[in-house]
Image 1 (cartoon, rainbow, N blue to C red):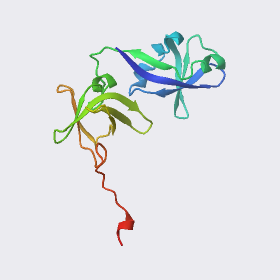
Image 2 (image 1 turned 90 degrees about the vertical axis):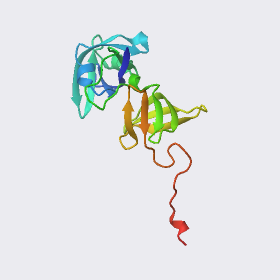
Image 3 (image 1 turned 180 degrees about the vertical axis):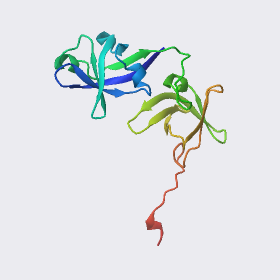
Length: 180
């Protein structure tokens, strides 16, 4: 099974290094020197990591056969994809791979069906579940402990405790203008 582990950003310097947007909780495992990664678009790869280092809080990689800025810039926006065993689980107890979460049923803590997870959106501040409802509409649910209270892989469901307005239109709106 394939897992997106990073997206290549801008070229860094003139010796073929690139910045990467890490999309894995295990970069030391997935993005280590010697790792061979598939790519999207596939025509760019596979790419073998030659070196990796952190510079100013950002991971920089250099790939075999890419030795100058032009070659590095040509890789921009390429997704790096690792092949993993589908039975492999993340190291942390409360960590999940996207493929484990896709297609889970989403229900509220009261048992009300919300929909099914169709996509995970990885944003800089947090991850979002994209949930398709029975009527075909979508709702975005932040994947944070305060809202997603339980992931039950055996039952194939995610239990949420949504604040008012997240999955319905009954938000409590407070306004100082109402205090006349």
